[in-house]
Structure formats: C-alpha cells, structure tokens
Length: 192
Image (cartoon, rainbow, N blue to C red):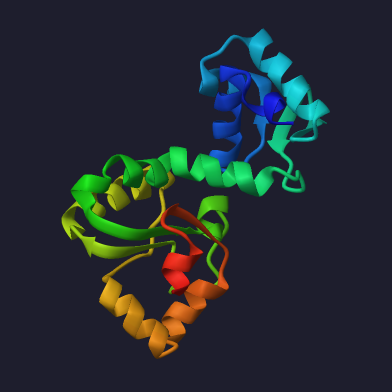
C-alpha cells in the first residue's frame, strides 16, 4: 500500500491539497491549478487514489468533484504527515531554532481538520519550552492570514506544564482530552 502512496510527485501534491483542508471538495481543473501539473497526470493519480480507496468522486452538474475519504485507513496518518509538512506545522519545524528550545509543539485535531471549535477557549496550538514569543507570533499571524481565522495558541514553559499536570489543571485536562498531532515531541512529553 505504501508504494501506492509515495511513488508520484503529483500524488504528493494532491495529498497536500486534499489534506491541507480536509473539508473541501475539488474538481479536476481546480486540482490542476493547485498542483501545477498537467491534467492527464492529475486524472491518472486521481484514478489510482480512487482505486485504493483514498478519494471519492461525485458528479455535480458537468463536473466531477473529488475529496479525501475520512474513512480511509490511512487518513489520520496522512493528515498528520501533511500537517507537519505544510502550513504552521512546517513553519514551526523550519523555524525551530528561531523559536527557542521547544519540547512540545502540538496542533489540535480540530485545527488540523479545519473543524469549528466547540468553545472559543479551545486551544489550536500548544507549544511547550522556552519560546521566543515574538517569533511565534509572526508564524501564527501568517497562518491566521492564510486561513482567514483567529488561532488560539498557548505557549507554556516546561515548569508550568509540570505544575499544571500535578494540579490536574482543568485547562490542561481539556487539551489532553482532545485529539492532537505532534509537530515536535510526543504524548509522553506532554503527559509526563
């Protein structure tokens, strides 16, 4: 199955397009514009992705619309990979040295899936370590501009994280109860 995923540059571009915002549907010409590839290459890859159960298509009017299947066995794994290689996930990795000493950088599952928050206080991004806040602010503002929405982010020192864990802080418990994708670190680093 892995050879069906990563053999083609066009497929990689399609995966990035589909999973950068999994709520969207795209028609073939739209995908051609977004990937910059030729229409035949895009159609060929869409047919392969449909055959292995990654994408689904639906005719609407005189166009075929495609979207990534959320019930695909590889959906969560590919979504995690795309979240780390595009958008703010990629920016955090690229600018890691400028951001300071990051122990954990986590994106909420809702944020990655472009789903609305249940409450305005939900955290989209949590970063733990000794962070250069001005650099982090630049990255967040760029992502807010790209998404046309406000991002809730929380920088936290390691000491604060440890203190909140020992106190079973409701704010931290709410973050731990949500799905998440780690750009830096892992569950063990966050939970302790």
